[in-house]
Image (cartoon, rainbow, N blue to C red; front, side, top):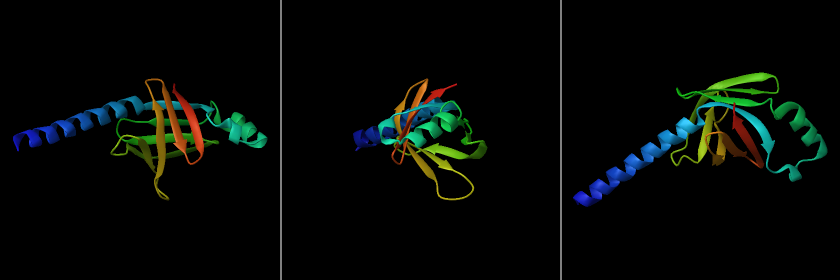
Amino acid sequence: MKKKALMITLFAFVTLVMSAQQNELITGKWVFKDAYNKENIDKEGLEFMKSEVINKMTFDFNKNGMFEAFMMGETEKGKWKLSKDSKKIILYISEGPPTEFTILKLTKNELALKLGFGEFLMQKS
């Protein structure tokens, strides 16, 4: 019985530490740099992406759980958190349901996210 309790406690601790490390990596300002699935985007979509998204759209994730996004000339603010399994970033804004981005890649300088059919690469600025 003591071994089982110790294993559960150890598992919970490791999960907590991993989540904290993910939070630290995500914290900061990210700039959209590329789309992974450009072959599925039509010509107008690619032109729009180049003019309005790439190097212009940003997310700034703060340590206090707040975020600020800049897209298409507008700023959006809200709260963010990681899912329990640390595989998704969940954004909460004042109106509407939460938005979930699946994390495809996360390193010190790169963050790849999936939203619906779109897959985007961001770099920390």
